[in-house]
Length: 153
Length: 153
DNA sequence: GCAAGCTTGATGCCCTTGCATGTATTGCTA
DNA sequence: TAGCAATACATGCAAGGGCATCAAGCTTGC
Image (cartoon, rainbow over all chains, first blue to last red; front, side):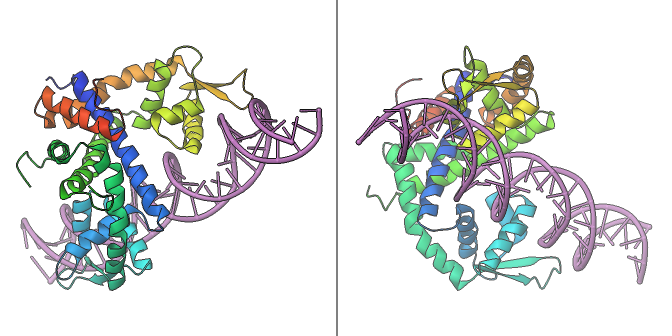
């Protein structure tokens, strides 16, 4: 498969990847907003922070985990902070750093959002696939695109 | 599979769908920009217009094909028109309508962009997949998410 | 121990997108 | 056929994201 010439099939996979994500993400985001919740990006950050044990995460860690640009992390955290969902603290060992920690209010939002989020995923992804085997297969193939290798996990 | 509870596997497929598209689209878009070309959204519109025989497409048709919001079509076409890549004409049968047609300059851009685009797809999708069978399988599964059914094509 | 360079994060500017609304035209209905 | 709803597209405004730049702190080499 020479560099300049992906097969027809690869091109079709690409086109559908973009279209499917666009459509499904749009639908899920719409459901979430209709239920009165903030954008999914907020959920993603809060989830990462909620999982992080201890003192919270540095901007850099959020950036790496969510594939965001650095300047977007700054402003996204700004908004979350303004909404009272996270706190910022300077890092003792590194005067440049900001440690971002989820607040009880942030944890509460996570808890309240999950049922709506879960239902949207079931509606727009689960229902479209023909069962567990297809879901697993899709997850595996997409995993290759994000360099997860092909092993389990 | 009750509405409120997608399986773990479905949730993982969802998460990877978002992440894979984000990553791959970002990488392709970056490659395209680095080569000095406009955003992929322009290519998509021009491609749709290029395929359309005859008088061009209505805004509504572009909207449906590319899954765009109506107001975004207006402004995207504005930009393309400003760049000389498309022309707008009123529709004879419907005084409200706009007919958008690709210009020779637009067709030229399509031709010049394709090699760079193709190479980016090969690099960021083709190389990550383990051959034709996987590409086909991925395309099929993604097709289900955009309601293409499971048949061929 | 200090200057140069790197890392971490913030910010100004502009473009794009989302949301609401406006305007013109068509179609339906009584 | 007058009036009203629906359709097709445009636009003002605000929020979000990309790009370049800036400031502060750390590290390294001399």
